[in-house]
Length: 481
Image (cartoon, rainbow, N blue to C red; front, side):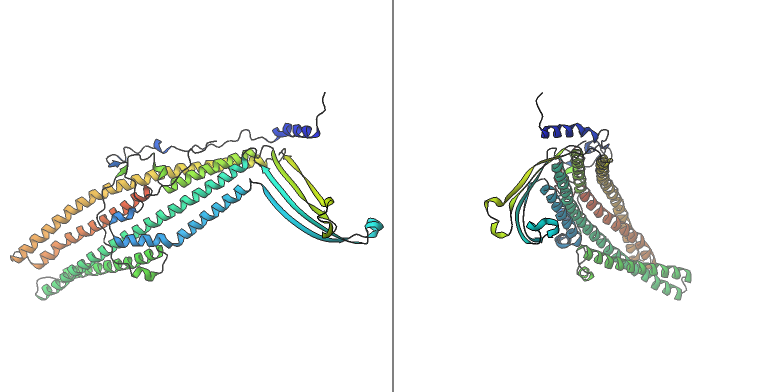
């Protein structure tokens, strides 16, 4: 029989031992959910559908207030939360760069000058007792061959995390714009509440003054006066509360802009327009994935976790590393470039895990669990995203119905107050009747203002739930293992 070379024998023996470290029986359990399989047709039935119903990139301009537009632009330009999100993106990209560099060849150079003296009793008379000067100049090469794709998977996993961080930064911008819009809507309601509280102060103040006149004329008693004084005090408290909300919301807006409270003092009273009726994209929910940044980021993390499994599996297989070193070495710099000063060695190195106490299996099991966690988070995010869209649409429907009913109530109350005013002019009613008739009108206007504010907030919620005009690129398809 032909003789086998020592290299072939070593390689064959190593491969025979490959079965000692096995990944058999380990696999993730999670399955990413298809958004199109989530039922929402009945809950969203009746909502207008259009392929172009996704929010625009500057969706907040639909509220029709230039001051709001300027505030959102200012917040998106230089708010601290965005700086933190951008820093996380840069860090993730740097980590991806490290993973990419780990799978590429590396070359390094070095030089050394050393002085040594050995004892004569140890090295002999020929070498011992003499001061020796040594100079070395080397060039080292190393290339870990990625035979099984594990290092590439590490790079793709890091790149997936970086992509997720980039989309997280977009989500931070969307969240910031939505929070500015919500705070601005709340500020508008606080000003409306202040107006209504002042009107109630005027009405109850007239009631108190009229009550004192009637008591002086012997036409009324103290009980009615005390009741009206209580109403007047309540109206004053409501006005004070509205002023406090205005101050607090201005401070909140200033903080969202990354500025101090003095910036909030420059914010004028909002002037919002009516919001349009809600419309939903006809491709919902199947295309929700590409529009909501949180869903896209979660999907990138699933892909990154899948690549982590590929990397963990590759560690069960043999690894090959090409390395070498060339250089010059001599006694002192004088002979460093002589023909006999050359040194060099190199070649392939093969290594294979055989017994590791279960470290590789535990690592793979952890990567499988990471994948299942990422899939579970992705599935939850998809379901929550569609729920938020549905909540916003249903809230808009309910608030529109409430606003219509309250508008009728306000119209009726205004008509009733006008009739009493006409009767007073005709001498058929007194001022007390007129002040009493204005109370239902103020109550209806107060309720209507609250519902309109909630309607504005629901419009903001819907735009955010639909992704706020962000177009993020998701991995296709999601890797499965």
